[in-house]
Each structure stands twice: as C-alpha cells, then as structure tokens.
Image (cartoon, rainbow, N blue to C red; front, side, top):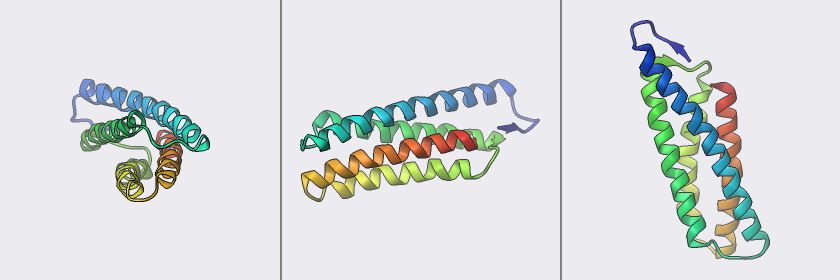
Length: 131
C-alpha cells in the first residue's frame, strides 16, 4: 500500500498488518472448509450444522476484512485496484451461495458450499498477490 503523507503511519501500518494477517487466516480457513466440505460431499453427507456455522463465520470474517480494507483505502492506495475487486467478489459471492444453495437439494448445497470455499480461497490468494 502506498501511504498518503498526511496520515498517521502507525495507524496505516497497524491496519495493513491486520489486513495482511486476516488475509492469510481467511485463505487457511477457506481451504480447511473446502477440504471439509469436499470430503462431506464425496461421502454423500449432508452439510452439518458445524460446517454451516463455520461457513457463516467465514462470511463474517470476510466482512471484517473488508471493513479493514475500506479503512485502509481512505488512508492508502492498494498497489492495484483489482485488489479491491477480489474482496468485493468474496463478500457478495459467499452469502449468495449460502442462501441460494440452501434452497435446493442437500447434495447441491454440499457441492456448492464446498466449491465456493475453494473459489474464495483462490480469490483471497489473488487479492494478496495484487495487494
């Protein structure tokens, strides 16, 4: 991030540090959920309440990550603007899949939620690479 000269460097560096660490945590969390969801789908199991609540937690953490990113964007510019698009994609995509997949069969719900975890793990990684 390229800091603007009139902002407090401590605040910018602290927010940038938190943004970077949350990004890594979200990638690991998305991969863990992707493995869990894929295994459940392969074993033809329904989406468990634990998986569903973990998925909602990932949505919430993505929102927190987005809020930190919004705070940072007011003080510093990302290296590439597409960095913001990856975050916006994740915050729109995850809840959309959650609500859409729950309306169908249990097999469809398991498949779509597992695949969506892999997709956002890639989006989070691309966000880091463009940040």
